[in-house]
Image (cartoon, rainbow, N blue to C red):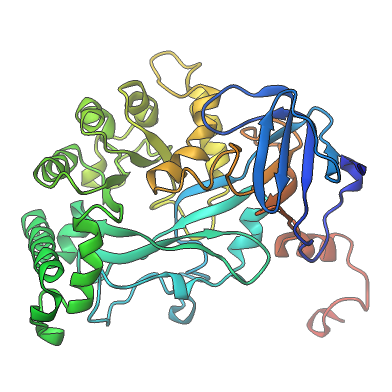
Length: 432
């Protein structure tokens, strides 16, 4: 057995080959809400976790990394992003989040648009984010299309699960897209689901009216998976009364696998959300009303929903979701700090970390594959310099699918280049 010291495991500029590795002597976080395990071990073989916990024997022939008592966790699963489909928001050539001129809506599959070389991917990977839930944006319909789950590896194959969910806008944005009011938006939703069921019963008999159709054949086929519950339906909603409308829909159509996104006023109807068993991907620190549908915003939103029994993960909608998923660690840490403020409700550390690891994976239906270090999950592991929910902590080593990842970023390269500029070593435009 080959033993390697952590300090010897320096990053490389190209991804290493998949390896079988055991990380020992760790403050091990499984990521499922359980407490860290002192002196823990995690073993990854052929890209999958095969064992994690205390008193784990390291198999023969497996490279060993001594974490030196440092924190070791599953990689962060960014709960709601547009990472990899937007480089510069205002430059249409680099923004594939929405399709305003397309005759299709629900049928749009975002997976082919994901660019694994987007600059946001190495930036977030270097901060311990290993997977991201990526959603399209809507234009001209309440339905935005089918989102994907991606990995942040340095290779060119970024998509973990294409067509992982359908994304829909309700509330203010959904009203604009659905004809001008919430009433018309919900009618568009109901009509689309009815037509999707008609299509599922008799695909050959479905009358496709082309661009004049309320629902194209392709959209009807895509929504069939939503209507039957084979595909989760993520819905952006903020206002409490809007949430209750969606919970009524859930009662009317129990097969729907609803996931609420945003939910700034979720805490005011938390018992109803919990009773409906509808999970939430919430924005962690929305504490001021940025719109009329967020008047009840509070930083205690997630803590209060969790206390009421709601399954809550953290997402980035309306919070630079294209680039800054790495802030989820900070937000989770802030929720821990909230527990120390009189009158506020936050999360304990274990629940806060689960909110950025296993819970986003579970609500999207991939809890058995990513988001924790339980045996059988993908080998996404991070060694940290300290508590991963503290601002001054850095990711020292990152594995994705058992492959050691480079942690170099463009920002780091620019820092090094210009930290001590040398005459003659700069680009021509900078030369005197």
